[in-house]
Structures are given as C-alpha cells and as structure tokens.
Image 1 (cartoon, rainbow, N blue to C red):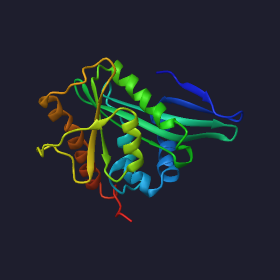
Image 2 (image 1 turned 120 degrees about the vertical axis):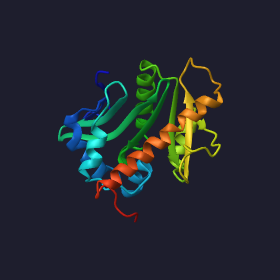
Image 3 (image 1 turned 60 degrees about the vertical axis):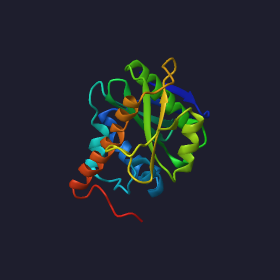
Image 4 (image 1 turned 180 degrees about the vertical axis):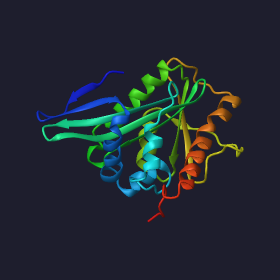
Length: 214
C-alpha cells in the first residue's frame, strides 16, 4: 500500500500508510498522550504501561507476510501527529485477527471505518477469508461500530481456546466469501484469543509491561 491522503481542512491533511520502525517514537507518543487509560484498556484488554519499551517493540515488530500494521497521521503546518493505528495478524491460512484504535480527538469522524476498510483490503490480498476480533463486552462504542460493519458474535462453546471472561469474539467473512461457517472453522478462530493471552503473559514476564488497573 502507498500512502493515501485526505484533506481535512485547508491547514491539515490525513495520511493513511503502513507502519514502519521509524514510527516507534510517534506510536509511543500516541499511546501516552492520544489514548487515555480507558481507551488503552479497551485496545489491549488490560491496563498497560504506555511507556513500556517491551510493548512498543512488540507493536512495531511485524512478521513478514503475517502481520500488517497501518497508521493514520494528521499532517499540518506545525508537524505530524499520529491519530490512529490498526493491525492485522494472520493466525493461520484463511483466518486473521484485527485490532485498531483512534485518538479521542478524532473519534466520530469516520477514521475507524477507513482503518478497518484498509485492513479488509489487506486481508483480501493476503488470502484471508474471515476476520475475527476480540472486544471487551463493556466497550459499547466498539461493539456498536463493528456491528455496523457487518460483524456478528462468534459462538463460544466453552472449549480450551474460548475467550477470557468479559470478552466477546466477533467475526465476519470478506466480500465474495461464503457466509456460512463450519464447526472446525469456528474452532480455529479461537486461536485469536489464545494469541492475545500469550502476548499478555509475555508482557507480564517483562516486569514493567503492565501496571495496576486504576
């Protein structure tokens, strides 16, 4: 993907482009100053330390051909400000997990929809048939958003890879893909929850990656 630019005002434009390692400082500034504690909890399902070097490294390090990340950058005369991020992780052939967040000052302006559309297009190019995403049950704004985008709740049969308490998995088929879902496919998508659980455990083992909830 090449950078896409949209004029917001005569003084500012919004650029949507792939994340690079050079974006690490701007991404950390975004986590610290553009997302409040509640927004970070919704994004990571835990009260993370936004200044954690381990967390930042994990977000910037992408597996070639399996992880894809994008940033939304507000470009204006005073400089550039990162105001949104989205990522896609291919869990296995045909299945990918998505996540995204938008700065509080930019919510309600269609940015989340643009980021999700970019993820859909990237997923299709990567041969993904189904997108899954885990959302906190009390994150009403995100639940309403993904419902409008055509996602539906995934059935949890209580298997070993079921979502953690308080989290609902949502799923959608990409355009042109079969709408139906067999039991084996549903089981494989639970790997998304297992992947995040592994990440959270890894962060906790780093010592300062997580901070107590407020």
